Amino acid sequence: MNKLIKILSFVSISLLILTNVQAQEWNVSAEEKAMELGVTFTEEIQDAGNSIYKKSCKMCHGDVTIAASNDRELPLAPNLGATDWQKANTDGEIFTKITSGKGGMPPFSGSLSDDDRWKIVAFIRSNYDAYIPPNTNKAAEAPKVEKFAGTIKDIETIYNDAAQSFTVRIIAIDDNGHPAKAKGVKVDLFVKRYFGNMALFEGERTDENGEIVIEAGNLKADNEGNISIIAQTSDKSIISKKNITISYAQEWENPILGRNIWGTSARTPIWMLVSYLVFTFGTLSVLGWAVFQLLRIHNLRER
Image (cartoon, rainbow, N blue to C red; front, side, top):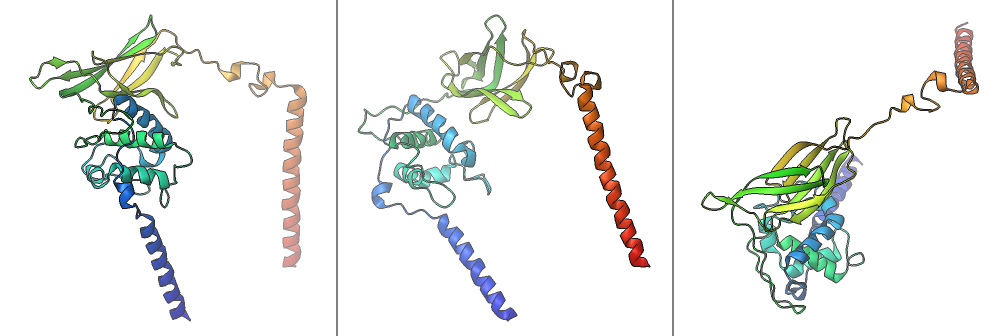
């Protein structure tokens, strides 16, 4: 009997492993593999795909970061910026996988349009330096986005108190070591909060001066008027953290000092204090009576 149980257990585990392995395999037809990018490979399309990716894909796959191979471990889904994965998949394969899903990945054919799914593909491909965009039927072939060729050294965040705005500036040098204006670099800006970071913007590109300017009124600061800012390139290669003082400090109200029922005993109505004391005394009395009866029962059994 024990031998039979062991055999059945082995078969069950084997089937479970086999099912899990099969769930990781993708069945993509030759016709689907041959499909080319269904949108033009422009900055606007890539940025739109980035926004859709963050809403629909980031929760499982995380940020798309350029790496030689997948640097994620289960339960995280693979890094779609891995060079070996990008090289092994055609545009059609990526689109089909997004469309049909597999295993733990749901199909997005019902929640995202064909155009939106192609935009995600365009965004994913923007993280692959060797990618050459095809000529699509929707518009003339768009040139590949020109990336900043220099070296990014730092990110500077400046707060304009009068305009209540932030200027995020990329500090960079060219190949000759001279200061350069880093145009077209994707940047994220967050305000640090107790339970996570609040995004002021994500994936915005710097202008011809290597800057991004954003209005940021009505931010909540601490009692001293300070906020903590995190500015980073979207690929997280450069991260800058800074405390900034703004003029409109948040005045926190102490709830104990207000007219709250449970603020202080002096502000609590008499009827509520009496009710609380009666309820507490009654509960303790019932618990005491129960303990007393249990002790009586125990003594009777001993006799």
